[in-house]
Each structure stands twice: as C-alpha cells, then as structure tokens.
Length: 519
Image (cartoon, rainbow, N blue to C red; front, side, top):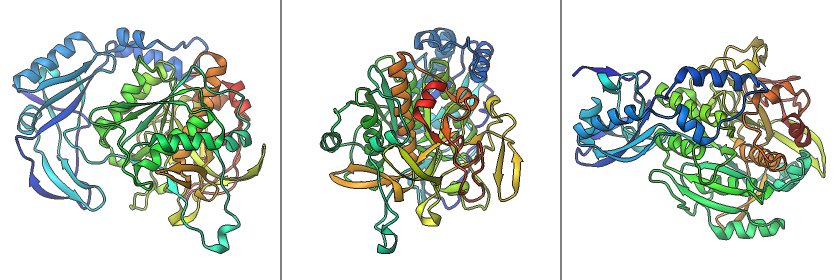
C-alpha cells in the first residue's frame, strides 16, 4: 500500500531538545484525527460572505453546520477501517467537529502513520513525547485526513498573563489597579449582565477554587455566575495551588468575564497543553450543543513559528466554523512585544490571535477614574515588564477588512503584507492591572490575557441585550470609525502607535456603547 506524506505535518526539533529515550512501545496514547469538510467549495463561498460583512450572511445553527459541512459518513468509515487494520480503537467520533479520537499503543501508531516517537527533554518545555519529519497516510485517506494531532505532546502554548511584581518605592506612586467593573465603567460598557448567554473560556491546565470565586464576587457585590467545568481529552479542573502557574490564568479569566457578565453561564473547557488538546477544546466549545457559547475567550497562544502548518490549518478551520455559527472568538495577542518572545531578532505574531477569524486583543496602559480615561498608551513596561504583542502575520494573508492598512514602525510606514495583529486593545499593564483573588490571595494581574475576557464579557452584554449573537465582528468594527478609543502613543518594540489602526493596539480600546451600536 503506498503512503503519502500529510501536507504540513513536518516537525523539526525545537533548538535545545535532546532525545533521552525511545518511547515505550506498549504505552497507550490518544491521537486526534481531523477530517475534511463535506462540500468545501460551498463552505468557502459562505465564509467569503461572512468575511465581507454582507448583510445577508446569516449564521448557521450548529445542526446546519454539521449537516452541510461536517465530516462525510464515508470518510469516517474509511478512517475507522484504517484504525481497525492497525489495532487502534475509536474513543470518540464527532461528525460536526470532523474529529475522530483514536487510542492505541505507541508501536501501533508508529506503524499506522510511519513515524518514530522518542522522549525528549528541553530546558523550558521539560520532558515530552516528540517526532521529527512527516506523518504519512495511505492512498484512500489521502486528501481525506487534514491533520493527525497528539503523536507529539510537547507543550504548545503559554498563558498571556503577568502578575504585578513587588514595586520599588520610587515607582509605587504610578501604580494603580482596577476591578473589572471599574474598567467596564471607564470603557463605557452598555448596561447589561449577559443573561441568556454563555461565555466559553479555554484553559490548558490549572484550575479554579470555588472559594476564591465566592469571595471575589461577593467583594464586588455582584451575583456569582454559574461556572461549569467541561473536561476535554484528559483535562479537568485541577488547581495546582500556584497563583503564578496556570491557576492565575484560569481564575483571572473567570473573574473578569463573570464580574462584567454575572448572569451569563461561564463554561470553562479544560484540556491538556498540546496542539491536539488546544484545538480539540476550542472545537468542542464551538460545537457544544449543551452550553452553546456565543463568545469564546482564549488567553493562551504561541508564536506562529512554533506551530506546524497542519496544526495551524486545523485550528484556523475550527475558528472558521465559529464564525459560520455566529460565535465571536477573542484571543490575547501576547505579552512579549513585537518579537513575541522569539530570540532570532525578527518580528513574530502570536497564534491563534493571528487567525483572521478571531478578534485579536492587544494591551494598553491606562489611567483614569469613574467614567473618564485620562491617559492611555501602548502597554510596554520594558524588557522584564512585558509589552503587547502585535505585528504582521507570516502565515495569513491580509483579510478583506484590513485592505489598504499599513503598519508604522521603526522602518516607517509599510502596507500590510499579511494579517495585521491586534484588532482591538484594553488595559493590560500589570502597573495598572486588574484586582483579582487567586489561590486565596488578593493580587494584581495584567497581560493581554485579561483583555480577551474583558472583550468577551462586553460581547456577552451586547448579545444579551440584543437577544441574538453579533457573531463575527471584525468587518463591522473596521467599518465603524470611532467605536474604539484611538491609542496614538507608545510602541511594542518594532511597531509604533499611530492615528487609526496600528500593530500595537489595533483600532484601540473599547467605547462599549459605540461598539454595541456598531454591532
């Protein structure tokens, strides 16, 4: 039987990784296989309409998406026959998300997909199971299988939050902090509590303590939202007790979204930190017919350069499905400035924020009180303090709604050559951060991680008031001049703020009432 390399499955060794052992051939693992859509051409036409912001681009229901553009029954049958041949069992099949999860021994997977798996060690990633080269699939699955995820389980993404460091007395006078409600007031969020809505939050580890949430919401005088933990793959609500670890991310996301939209259900999708886990969690949130989130907040990501093409394409595909069913996805643009933490001297943007199907959320540093913002600039607290991610994608082309825009930077003004990041912004500096309670203690947190749930909660309020989801918002926001507070001062390294859209803060921070009117 001839086999074909799966396009985009090429994996290289992360610099600094070393092989420590062969994998145990009898160890059982799970792998997620992503299949093609039925009627890809018709789906592409639908997406064109949605991307152009056409008035007649009505979102599909989740059921319609599955019927028209899910996986074909014969494609699933082919994959199951292939799995059976290799002694692999099917754990879960889902035609709507076009995924089949397989379980089997490492030696069975190695033979099925022509790969060699080794155990690696890396100074920042720890120990992980990995592979190099490509994945192969047989003739009858060539073109049917879009991605095979989970053979390699290296940590894929990092959370984009920063806990405020202890201050030197000299700097203390400039520091301030806000509750989410104070920010909602400063940013003129419309009245509302998100009732009837569900906000989906994606988490790649850690967990929350109910006691923290009870204490936090009662300290703000708001009702505690209904919080539901949804386990994906081997994930679950597992607090580590370390506020500096993923618990900080999980708790921050729930507290910000829940304070601003206390009548919404907050569904937290917990998964493992791998490309398979990340993509699967977002996919389950998009296709969830039980909780039906109308907006999803993602505060995790990694530079485009560390993703395989198959993973990015599979993830971007899930984000297209979100746009098709009218789910708004907000993603943090990163906390390491224009390099996104890559030390090769080039500019990088963070993914999934760089997908054209998300609302990419950058960061500012804010001063103000009551309903008045007195000063707002690009968040850039220097090398160790963090800075907003932003720049130009090396993967995705310029979307229709960004045509004609340029990025201003140290090289002057240059027309966009790819998707520009971010779209919008909000307070993110730990110096002017968010008051939260994590693992029992009051703390101040910043990072673009905080901006994604801030925008998600704004969208939930707007959806609740409107009684229907605003859906894919990017085309409308770019058309609505003045719905955001334009940030014109500061830089994130290579890019500078300027009048209008820029690669630091996008269109700017929200004027909630104007955003609601625009949508």
